[in-house]
Image (cartoon, rainbow, N blue to C red; front, side):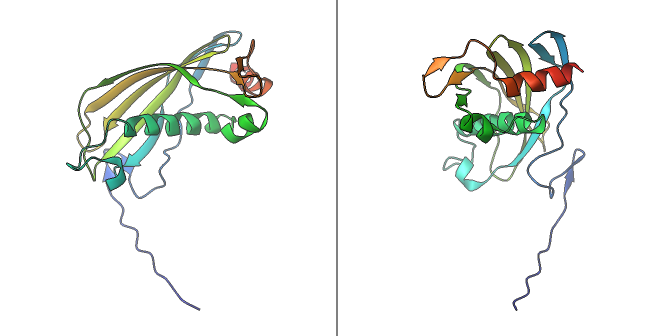
Length: 177
């Protein structure tokens, strides 16, 4: 039997233990204002250490990488409140992006750590509006802000649904408490 020893080096930067898994515990803090109309007061946070495949040849995070990080944070945020994206797809529902706005403020470099913050800003009918902030953990600088709008779509018919699927409605109602 082979024995392997794994040495974990812990670095605490601005209160975040970077030796932990990629996901930081969520801050769901959702406040419901009307039936199926939700606003978020707190950010869900997802930690990413910049790897070589995230960057261009100069060691700067490639602009498209931020989109992947945003989607990952959004999927993990949904999972943290009981919506597994794979289950949605199995039920025949998808959440495509129909609108996106990005503003790049500063670059993040190879070896740095990014905090991808996301919040479901509001739910109006079948529209899910999300806000994003990506910050560099080491410098505490804001690097990107974004807004993304998703809609619920029936995968088989390829059409926008007239109402949210029950699984999403259930989560919204549970949060309404």
